[in-house]
Image 1 (cartoon, rainbow, N blue to C red):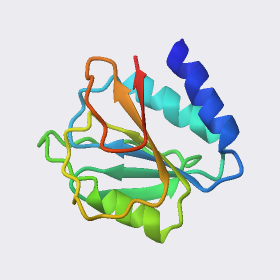
Image 2 (image 1 turned 135 degrees about the vertical axis):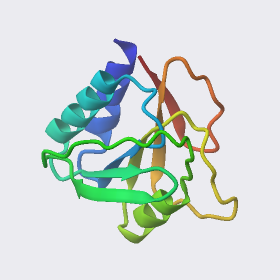
Image 3 (image 1 turned 60 degrees about the horizontal axis):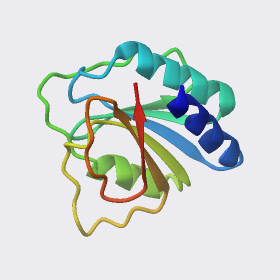
Image 4 (image 1 turned 120 degrees about the vertical axis):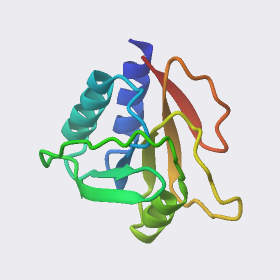
Length: 136
């Protein structure tokens, strides 16, 4: 329950900001129910938020309130570069990224939004920047 309180605090502190939730679709190892609950919660707290599906490239961009089915790929290839480039161009201020942090990130890429990495509990990676939040 701790991560839900932390996510609530994040959403309350960022409710007036341009916010996006990115789902890493390079594999389907994360509990789908958790992902669906996060999508629903973020949509309720910020109905203007954007939902992005990405693996090694951005696959889709939609409003979080649209009934969007998450499509997963099982190739395991992930890169965060396109998602961050999109966020920079879209002037996103806060980015929530559900991933296992095993993707590629171009080192010279400037990341403008503040990033919260929502990581499945079985993974304990070091994040390159921003804040890590383990979700179970």
